[in-house]
Image 1 (tube, each protein chain N blue to C red):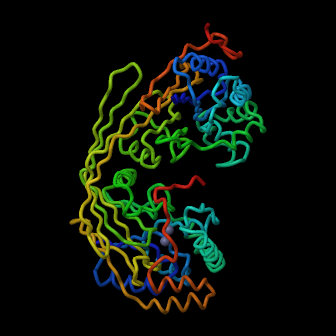
Image 2 (image 1 turned 90 degrees about the vertical axis):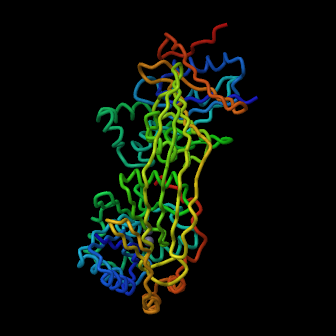
Image 3 (image 1 turned 180 degrees about the vertical axis):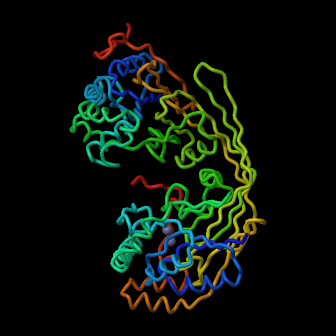
Length: 247
Length: 270
Ligand SMILES: [Zn+2]
Ligand SMILES: [Zn+2]
C-alpha cells in the first residue's frame, strides 16, 4: 500500500534531514515514496552535504523525488541560469551579504544538478510543488484569501495541493459554494450557470530545517486520502551526520 | 458617465477610424484603450499617432510589450506552431516599421488603468499574455476581478467581446493545524463583472466587423458594439506591405486561422 512522505525546507540542515529520515524509517506502515518540495539548500548548515545525501539514499530508503524551491531559484539567479540576474529577491530579504554566503554555500556543479530538477509533480489527483503553479515564491497559508486558495487549486488541476513555501504545517479545505455565472456575447446570452464544486484542499507540509523550528513533514496515504502531520525531535548532533534510528 | 472601451487595434487604421466615428455617434464621455495598438496590421504608426492625439488612456498590450522588450513570449501565447511562425513574421515587420517615438510611447504604457471601481488591463491583472476566456472556471474568473480590486474588470486580448456576470460567489474554508481544533472561514463576493472589449482591428468572432464596448458607469449597462468598416482596404494594405497574406484572409472572415489555445489558465514562467 502506498504511503508518501512529503517534506520541504531542509535549507542545508543535514542533522534535521537525518532525523526526518530516521522517523520515516520508524513508520509502521513503510513509506513507499519520498517527495522533497524544494529548499534543499540555504545560507546555514551544509548545503553540499545535504544535496549529496539526497542524491545517495541508503539501502532500503525510498529514492527522493525532488523539485526546486525558493532557495534553488536564488542559486539559479546568482549563477545566471534563469530568472533575473543577481538574485534581487535574495538581497531584498536577506541583505547583500547573503549573495556571498549563498555563492559559497552551493557550488556551481551542485547548482547545475539542481537546475535539472522539476518544478513540481502531478501524482494521482495531487500536485506537489514548492509554491504554486503561479510561482515558486507563492506563499500559501491558512490566512491566504479563500478565493486565492481556490484559484491555486483550480490552476493546479488537483484535489490536493501539497506545498512548502510557507514552512507551515496545515490542512486547509476549500469548498466552493454556489456561483452564478452569466455570459453575454454578440450573438447570445447564455442561461446562467451555477457552479458548484466538491471541496479540495491545500496542505502545508511544514519544514525540515529552518532555524528555530522542530523538523516537521507529512505522511499521505493515497488509499485513504488521509494526511498526518509529523514532528520530529531534532538530533543534538547538529551539523553532523546521522541521528541513528533507535533500536 | 458613458465610457467606450477599445482594444487590439493591431495597426488597422481603417477599423480604428470607423470605431471612433461610432463612439462619436454614441456620445461617449471617455475612451479607454486596452493595448495591442500594433502587430498584424499595416499601419502601426498611424494608429499610435491617432490614439496619442486623442489622449486616450491606454494600457500596454502583449504586442506592445513584445515590440519594446523583444519577443519573449513562451509558446503558450500562440495556439499553434504555425501561428507562432506567422506571429514572428509580423513581429519582425512591425519592429522594422515603427518609428522610434512610437516605440518609446509603447514602452511607457502602464500595465493597468483605474477609474473608481473599474480596472482596465490587456490580458489579465497578472499578465498581458493571459487569456480570460468566457469559459474559464467561474471562481478563477472571480479571483482575477478581486485581484484587480475592482467591481468591473475590462480586458481584451482574446479578440472576442463578451460580458460575464459573476454573482453569489461563496467559499468556505476549514483549517486544521496539527494539534489544534478546526477553524472555519466564510467568504462571499458581491456581484462582479468581466467585460471583454473584443478587437477593433483583428476581430475573431466570426465576422469581419470591428468590435468594442460601451459602458455606462451609472447603470452598469454594457453594450457590445459591432461596427462594419472597409476591411478590404486593410486587407489590400496587408498584401501590399508584404505581411503574411493569411492575415488578410482571416481579417476578411473575422477568425483566427488555427485551433484555440488549450490552457486558458496557463501563466508562463518566463
Ligand atoms: Zn490583440
Ligand atoms: Zn494581446
